[in-house]
Image 1 (tube, rainbow, N blue to C red):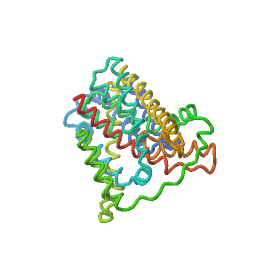
Image 2: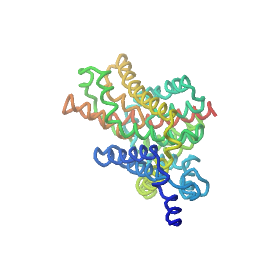
Image 3: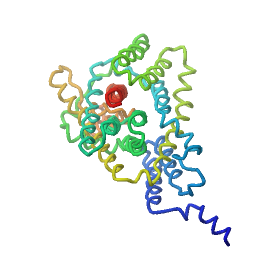
Length: 374
């Protein structure tokens, strides 16, 4: 009986408390949203199951926790806390991204820049709530709707807040189809939503090859803090567009990014241990993240409306919402809202311009914040 009692003390049942139950419910909710609603399943399934892994209670003597040095999970988490996984994700994103829409209509890069306003306004809000400048910068980047960038910047500026920031960023990325449409409809008129845009002209092979090289050199000199993220993004895109490294590009955008996504998702999910994650600061971060994402969406739409005051050939303001970095989900949402008004109005390719510009913009913003707040 004494042996059985000792064994019981090492079970999860003996160690469990209400906070573990709450986190397990959150993890199951993520998995349900991914499977039933198809909200970013490649992200939410690994993160959701990671939450389950990280919130099975255990006796501390067993050295199983993700924050315990020497545990298996702690070794896997090393790639998160040292900012290794995010640049590798960017390599895969670059290898699967087509910048043609941006090259054919360069002015759309302004929409990607305008959407980053959410980052800096949220930074101010976080400072007002008592977060340190470094923590505020890490929280603000949630507005870019770019999970890898949020993780990378948090690993450099606010490692203690990495779990809540990462979960917040990926949650709002997954909820793009829910959050963005009401804001887009509120800020545009029916007439504006009916605007049709001309198909973009195809970019030449030379343009596609030169774009990642020139973009990296310009942006890296202006914001050296973005070298890791932007460098891997542009390198991945060069592999794709060069025409001589297709095997490397295929690996980067397929098996390689899938492996890193699994490791990143599971370890980020596992980092949300109940005793670390369920705090008032986490609630504040989620609230600030929601505000940041909403402001970023609104900023892109409003700036598109302002551009129309000076453009002869009007652009549909809906594409401004794609200025956040959620590629390609924000562009798909633009397409969905436009088709609701006009079944023949296809804006997907036009929306991809500000969408990929937003990826570049959020990486630059992260580099600037890292330089200023370190």
